[in-house]
Length: 265
Image 1 (tube, rainbow, N blue to C red):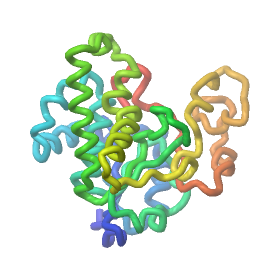
Image 2 (cartoon, rainbow, N blue to C red):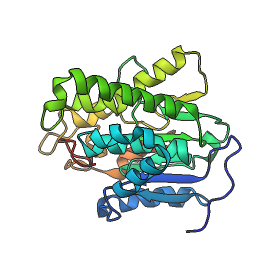
Image 3 (cartoon, rainbow, N blue to C red):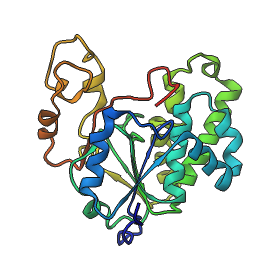
């Protein structure tokens, strides 16, 4: 592919990162992936595989390799890898079930450090999902978060019975490498007096609170106002879902393609 255009004024390169086990990405996400290319001319889309991810750790973050290899679920390694994309390359990261609704250029142009999005405004450890990230390369928040991962993984390896569970418990997954880790790392970063982290307001990137579509709205459940935003529900209507959020830059359908067992993506 052609090289990306010049970085945004704040230093974020025009690269959009996504990840899957292999280069054989599920057809289900083709249209969502295409939305990023359509709305971001001049940006380069980069797909990382599991093999690419480990090669990045080995080449540029060898101090992390033991922790990375010891993580018991593929989704945990994918969680770590997206932090590395941001630190090593910069740009934007988006899960495969994200659809872009607007160009992100004006939103991200002023950013000089790491950018994450809030899903809700309350003090809940799922309030900062790690499904979308943005950054110039080298932003120190990502190293701060990576050291938080190492600390949490070590603590659970020594003391957590959850590590012995098969599959690992979801709260341990998310507290070690996922949204809960990001929430606590961001809080600790701010408490340490560091300010080069932007948290976008709820609704900007995450207009759908996953609790609205994931709790009680599975296949066979009656349709409600959020069923239109759940691809596996009979009430799924993407156009109706998107129409709910005229102010959002993107929407994620929380498809959880990694699977409930945490052994994929």
